[in-house]
Image (tube, rainbow, N blue to C red):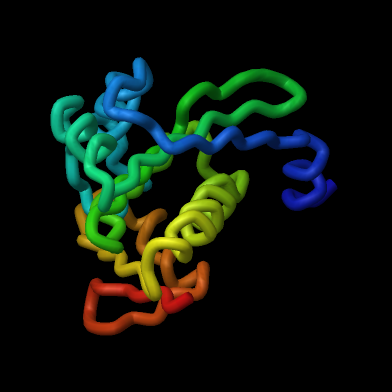
Length: 154
């Protein structure tokens, strides 16, 4: 059995939601940004108060993804912070890598953001550990506007 067949047999389910400033999930999102080094596009660490401010801002979006499959529940494994039509942070827990979740999550974000903007910017800031995240935007239809800055036009 190949990798693609195995992943298909897992029957992966992603529950993606936009978080509010009072969401009880803010603590887990903070922890995710603090601890995730391999799949953190900017290496940025957000505090719970910063995340609550983003969620309360009408011009911003805070998304979280929870994942399960036919074997078990992975919990909240991904988060994205969008401010002024730019992805200011995107992180996926290493326990969810290799299943295509980052691509499903990003496509959902693009669908949500095309209602509020004509394009979405995103940055990759290389860190010693985030090599797995460096092609995320390229692989999802973004064009490199300048080194490290990617743009997706809707």
